[in-house]
Every structure is written in structure tokens, then in C-alpha cells.
Length: 296
Image (cartoon, rainbow, N blue to C red; front, side, top):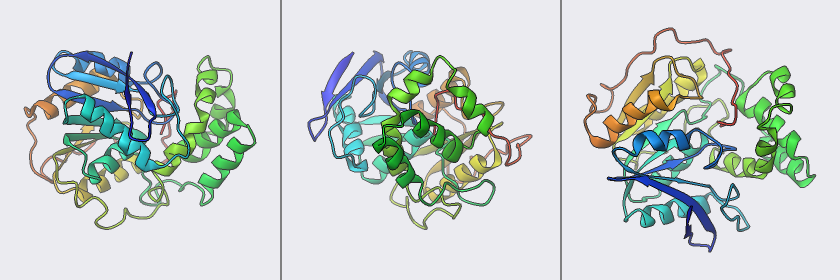
């Protein structure tokens, strides 16, 4: 484990493996270096890249300086990019994809951007998050109800059935999820304004002109496909890929080759629009799936 200090003095823990151009991986909700999909993914990418995984603030071995603001998390990523040599490709999954997109919009030195299933809700193919979602998360945390905070997130943001959520507290990973429950308020801030069931704000990411890979799992629900299509349409230089057979819990073995091709420039798709690959057997809007820690 290594550390870097962000602009506000927060110490961030990170791991660095491999050799080659720098790639930074950004986790989604409730995940960090020792719990989530990016560790196994980093191991597969390390043959071609110097790969950085880090604990977002408030998680794992990283600090958590108050008050929280999305700008501070962008500065955290900026500190990692500086540590990586001043420029890096960035991959983000779920809320980490939303954070990476925010960082690109703010002009960080990102050479290429890859996004997997940012949890935006852009139409009526699933219910939006409640209007008071952020307030409910804050109230539950203020009352010390960490387990209930995770359950509320799983029900209202992820959209898992009540029975599945009720059973989660018996899973071995439950204590790990509740340990970082307070960071669900941070993820809610990162995705604020994008989960109302309305189209993405016009021109929101028009300034993000760098090459961007926008990916979704072939077995993910329709609302997620619709969201990622909307993201690809909103970006000036997007390549849209559907990973056959994958869900939100994407397998590193399926994702790594796509990222390698994109980051090395050897992928066969170039130019906005022509990269769009239709998903086969697109599931209906009711096709939810368990998060298992790789949360939105």
C-alpha cells in the first residue's frame, strides 16, 4: 500500500501494479481496494499498464476530511493522476463512472475515459429514486442506522426486491458494507440530478471531448442500456460497447480485453455513433440483479 495526499490534506491509500502507461480504476458505491471488482481487473490489466487502484475517501485505508463535497473527490483523483506522472487513462464503474465523468468535465489530465454502467435513470423504464433520497440517507446515517442505510440504498437506488435485501444481512459481506455505509451519502451527491427519470441535462458533458468508451452489460436491465446510450449520445467522442452476457457485476475476464483494446488504441471502433453495437436479448425493465458489493 502507498499513499498520496489530496488538496485538502486527506490521505488516500492506493496500490500500484504492472508496467506501462498509467490507468486509474475508480470504484462504485460500497467498494474499495479490498472489496470490489477493481482488484481482479487490475491484475489482468497489469500486463500492459501501470494500474492504480485506490480507496475513495471514507473507505478502506483512506482518510475522510469533512465536509464532503464532490469537488474533493475530483481533487482526490487529480492527486492520483499527479502521482501517476501527470496524465492517465481512467476507468470508472457505476457511481465511479459518474465521478470519472465529472472529473473529465472539470478538465483533469485524463487521456482516455472508460465508463461502465453509470447508474443514471433517464426515462420511465424503471422508477426514479425518491425525490428525498439524499435526505433519507442523511437522516438514517445521522441516527446511526448504518444497516438501514445500506438497505435503503439497495431498495431505492439499486432496485433490489425487498426479500433479497432482507436476506443480505445474513451474508458474510454485510459487515463490510455497513462499515462504509456513510459513503453512500457521497455517492448520492456524485449522481445527484441524474436519477429522476428525466433525460440527461442538455449539453451537460459537451466539454468532455476526449475519447470515451461507454460500456454496458448485455444482460443488464433495459434502463441501464437506455442510460448508457444517452451518455454516449451526450459525449462528442464516444464509443458504445455492449459486453455480451454481462451484468452490472461484470466479470474482469470479459471487461479487461475491451479496456486493453481501447486504452492501447487497437480497438476496431472509432468515431461517434458508428461504435454502437446492438445488444442481443435485451432484458426487460424488470430485470434487476443483486449488487453483491459492486454497487451503484
